Length: 157
Image (cartoon, rainbow, N blue to C red; front, side, top):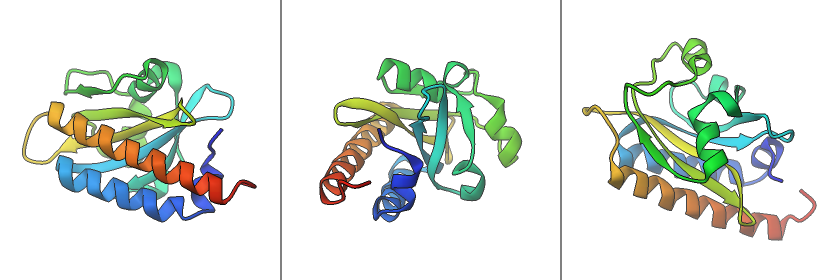
């Protein structure tokens, strides 16, 4: 199982942040976050963030059963959500930023879903689209390859 500690103690942190920055640029999103499934499987733990409040988003958890990221982790299916979606309010309350739209794709480790990559609030448009979901899915796959390679190089983590 992948943990936040793995991302914080290896080159995965800098490489992951670079991937998230590319997601923001290519999807024209205000921010992007990698969420990992908690060790007990009940929460989605904010792990890496590219945006205005990484200190908050890298230290917050939302229940799997009450979040869109949890839905993606449970089903393994990426999605684009607009303003009418029910987003978990905990993140908005902590960051002071309203989530208007989200695109989310599963993130796998050793062929199992380990988390979800998300981008929120498209810039100068109302919603994300299929092209954004494809971009996010591709970036998630690249991050998966990076993590697999790092785990082979650092088997003790």
